[in-house]
Amino acid sequence: MRAWPIAAAKYLGIALLAVPLLGFAAYSLRFGIRGFGVDLTQETYIYTPDGPFTNAAIFSHMVLGGLIMMLAPLQVIGRLRTNYPRVHRITGRAIVAASLIVALGGLSYIALRGTLAGPLMDAGFALYGGLMLWAAVQTLRFARAGEVDRHGSWALRLLVLVMGSLIYRLHYVIWYILTDGLWSNEQLDGPFDKIQYFAFYLPYLAALEVWIRRRGRHGARSSCAGSVR
Image (cartoon, rainbow, N blue to C red; front, side, top):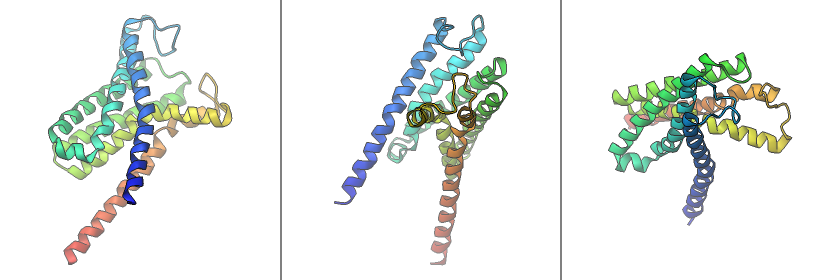
């Protein structure tokens, strides 16, 4: 009887997370597709008039980012991995390929045009893109090597980074609800904005790293205990 409310709470939590995730992914897809065919100069600063390569970099970043945001969470569902391993592998390869393009697109945009708020924001977002690139490469590398545990750890890191765009915006939603936008402005160079350049991914990666290392130590202890028996 006790398992039922726990399971219900788990699925309710997943559903509540799925709503903003799917909503933002759909927005990213729709907006990115529009950026390839419509002049968005009046709508967003990220559009570059007469800049086809710059626009291709940022809008491919948005389109593929929306796709991997919808697909990546499915990869951590154990039953799907176990029951449909071929689907897991094919989807995983697609996610890694898309993540590489997303990361390279974002880095290219920063190199060509820069972010809205200047060098510090450039640095924060370039580090984010570099980490995504690294995580995607490592995820594929250890999958091909058959190192399941290391592959899984890097896949989780990649998942956190994939969710970064959504987390970035959720931080602002929560902050504006709580403070009415204290220390933030439209130029994104207020004190809160500057923290945000790094806060939407580094704390989450750090928390994940602690969990991965604790899990590894627990597994090692269990293995040692089993060998003693």
